[in-house]
Length: 221
Image 1: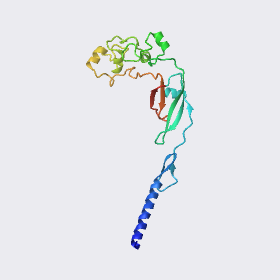
Image 2 (image 1 turned 135 degrees about the vertical axis):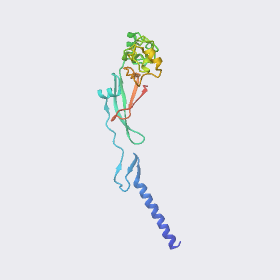
Image 3 (image 1 turned 30 degrees about the vertical axis):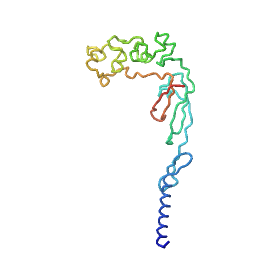
Image 4 (image 1 turned 180 degrees about the vertical axis):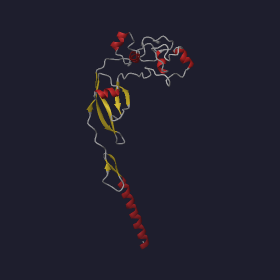
């Protein structure tokens, strides 16, 4: 090998070593996951943050997450695959009365009301029995206010199922809906358009307890 070839080889080896050092200086790996290091400063490592301590849900947690009375749980924390921290509620006790059809009314209450404990929508108007009790409509009557529009349709199109003429224009809900089949959700406020399914037998998972939590429900085992 000539002297010139040796010099070229040494240069190539040096370049390779420098490139490898720069790469290692940017990213390092350990058993706990990826550690990011700022280029040019091997001491600025940002490792996984320690997990917060588990805690029992508070009355405010219950309110924010819509947890029914009778459900107790603990907020716990875990790492996501990307190394960030997620939180979730582990249900520790559920003493709510039995609700076989999951409509938000216990079997005992359905027996008192005369609704069907095996059918979540006794009158088949498109609203759960529990939601009907909550908003004041009759869970055994398809059209509570008698305006010839069933309760579920009125809620869907932002009409009031407790009023014959939600808009107050003298035409009545049936005529107004026929004239405007797209409904009135962009123009009329209805006390019922926030009707939601009950949480029945649900396990609740919180994605981020430090901000407005996104809640996902899965049927309990």
